[in-house]
Every structure is written in structure tokens, then in C-alpha cells.
Length: 194
Image 1 (cartoon, rainbow, N blue to C red):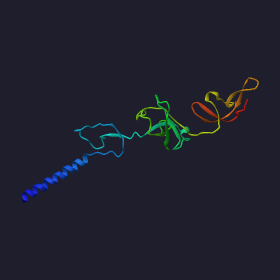
Image 2: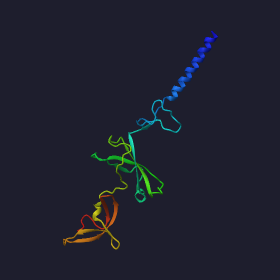
Image 3: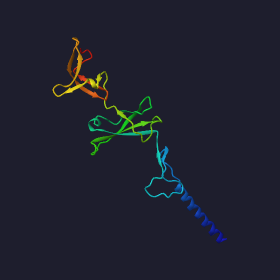
Image 4: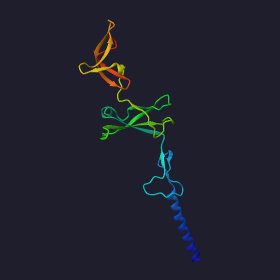
């Protein structure tokens, strides 16, 4: 009887050991997401510091951009941004989530992150896409195409305005906010300038 009892306890110990080993082999992701990389398969030997699976949460995507320091100084966390993608009619709305406090010494640029929540499924991790960020906005501004603003050493920034004599006249202006297409005129001309 004692021999059978010892065998039973030994078998229970082996069972508990096997159950513990099985529980260690169960891998749970700390995030919800999609498996995007699986370098190991059943039967492969896992080693320390080697990933077994890569899981990505696609409910929010982060775009990283390196921009000149002068432009980065105007950005703040929470600034509006847009991520464009060929094939999408509308750009994906995003927000600036990080403006690096350090300058990249190799490129003299600042790394900026923008985050899109619940993005269009066409926007996937690893894509190279154009990102635009809004640093400042101005209401009721006078705006002209960037190509209409000229610059010279003597006159500074100026525009050409059609006068009542049907001739173009040079008007010195102060330029405010610029983007790739438009420039805000802060002073020098008014809506009624002729």
C-alpha cells in the first residue's frame, strides 16, 4: 500500500511539473492586434532575447518624420496633421504626439511623430507616405499663392499688384504663415489694395 501511495505521489509530482511547463509555453500578448512576423515555428528552439512573434495594434498607427528645426520649433503635441496615401480620396486625420527635444546630429533635423487613430485599412505599417502638419492657423487672413511672393536683397518680400492705371506695381509685404502652396500677407496690402 505504501509503495502504491509513493508511486501515486510521484506521478502527481510529475503531472504538476508537466502542467507548470505547459503553462510556461502559453504566450499571451499584452496588446490586442495582428501577428505581423513569426520568425519561429512549432518545434524551433527559442533563445533568449529573440522574438517569437511580433504583434501590432493596428487601431492606431504612428508616422515618423524628420523635419528642419525651424519648422519643428513651431509644432506642439496635439497639433493637427494629415497622412496622405495614393488611392485614398481624403487624407487620414492625425495628431502630433511627439516632437523630439533633441536634434539629430547627422541630419540636423527633429523627429516628429504623428498618430492616426482607427486609420483607413489601406494605411499599413511600413508604408512611406507624405505627412503634413499644421503648426499655426490664422482666421480671416489675406492669402496669396507662394509663387506670387517675390524676394530681393534690396526690397525684401514683395508682391505685384495691378493698379488703377492698369500697370503692375511693386508692394513691399510682410509674410506670415507659409505652406507649400500659400503664404499669408501680414502687412503691406489689404483686400482693397489697387
